[in-house]
Length: 332
Image 1 (cartoon, rainbow, N blue to C red):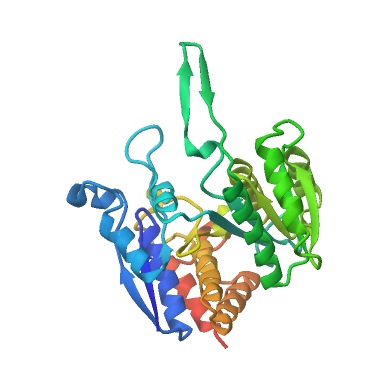
Image 2 (cartoon, helix red, strand yellow):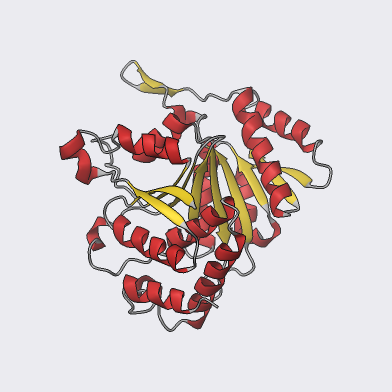
């Protein structure tokens, strides 16, 4: 029996989260779900979109499945995702990128993983004005931060049977920060002689991903580049609606869709739960529930390829509930 924190979120979060829960429950995995509410709708009650008891639930259970939560732009509360990453030291952002038959894309046979450092770089947010007409932001890399994300990438490649790790950088310009990242990647790569290692400057990487994305396997990137490239790659396989994600540390892991909360369609039972279902699949693999994860992925893949029961965003007319139930009907 697995004990997992379930955070429905807000906007379409509850709809896609409970759809995913229903699919996972239907495949037969024994899970005791610890449902915890977070987001804009709990601020009035707790004066905080992320109450401390939600974080404590994740600390206790070690793993969570989380729906999207609205983050105000330019005002309001701090991102719940950023807070969770900091509080739980979730230093790895894992983004599997894969094409599925039936989803219109310009590419075929993409199956890569983006591993993004999650706690350093410009995202530390150390910045200030210099007088009235200039602004300065400080880019921070540490040896510890570089070593653990790069080693995670190689370990992930080894565990998953992947053949190549590409370290992405701009060390030709930023010789201290990106230079350290690249140097550490070269050193660690020597410990994994059975995994091919290559380096790629970030701008060339973006060009290559548009030209030949199917030639890449595992990409490891600092925080800023990883944020940008992960969305670029989501666009290669159909958009954020098909992009699962996870934030993983040494003690805790949170699996979530990377798309937003789409409040404009909340409560209409038309949201596509695919991204969170894919996140749930990767959560089950993380838990060692390989048979169940494969059954769900095969059922989802069959539904997408068949094209009969799809939500409106991918050309169908099915509700969230109908789409969910049809996936479940495909379990062998």
